[in-house]
Amino acid sequence: MATDYDAPRRTEADEIGEDSLEELKARRSEAQSSSVDVDEAELGEGFELPGADLSDQELTVKVLPKQEDEFTCSRCFLVHHRSRLAEERRGTLVCRDCAA
Image (tube, rainbow, N blue to C red; front, side, top):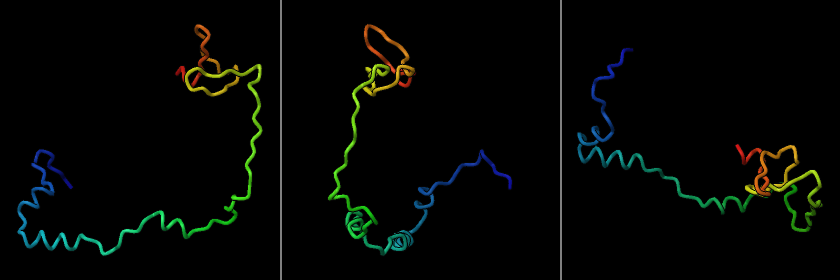
């Protein structure tokens, strides 16, 4: 199918301008849905995932101090291995991710 790209395009605004008031009212009533808005928070309260009750559990993580071969990036403040060191200026260490 050939398309004439130079021809003026019709938009919905053009079509709406030509419609009668009765047609617009009929379209509006058709477009309105009969569904009721439901709060998502209320929907989530009814679901209970299997094994999700962690109220009696205490989460523990073993935290290690910074090792000799690691550094803290001065931009993102993450601890990286020395192999990730991109630059060192005036005592500030920057990782490769932040230097890029």
